[in-house]
Length: 328
Image (tube, rainbow, N blue to C red):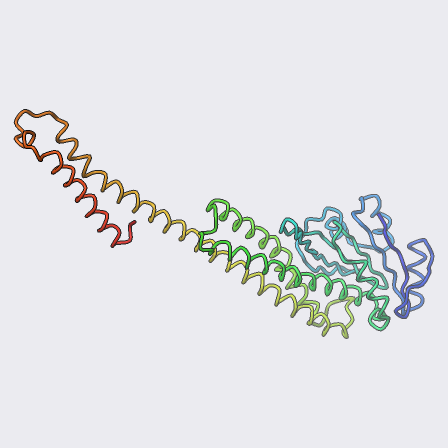
């Protein structure tokens, strides 16, 4: 559905005709105004009117309606089409999810299509309206402000993930061994999935931002290039943080698996040591339990205490050896 429609002239919002065609004509006639239309999860029928009025490319319309697109930038004859993926971080469940935001800019118009509820368009609109000098640059200013808001939120999410990773690292390397090994491994794997979801939003956006920061992109004001370079620099920093998180998670998982292996080896050594100590009295008891007739020591008075003492000394000696070697 259409959530907003406004004409901006000289960096200020003005009242305009309710009809898209009339509003666009008025914006183009003035020469220093543009029309901004915002849509939220529109249907194909709702988008038909916008498509006809603004001459949007059918392939871009298809992407905007179906969503599930990678961040990208595409240039058509009458418009520039950009896809961004705002990220949502749920602190209660420590999960990362992504929405989608499509931006069309052209001759005196901006069309934004939002899928999901996390796109920062309300904040972007308020910020732009509070700074008419930036908004006076037209549709380019809107694209920059949206990109800047999305990437700045990436930085916040990366910081939250860094905090969660430090907590997970403390849990894995705790003296107690991190609790249940299977639960710890599952937590690491789940966290790695969250980082991967975040990476799918930030990584592909590098090429579009780098392209916008350069020259020769239609419908982008040349004076906006330094601003897009700033966004690209912030995005590079985010991607470096994400790569660092991913590498550290892999290292933590490897260290945890190594801990589990060492712990299992320790358990096997202890089991083997106790089995060896139990084997000596079992062997002696087995020999004397066979009831042979020709066993002279059976008739000696001190045979029983001697055998018991031998078994005790043998077990004690083995215990000392295993203790010295660190098996017990």
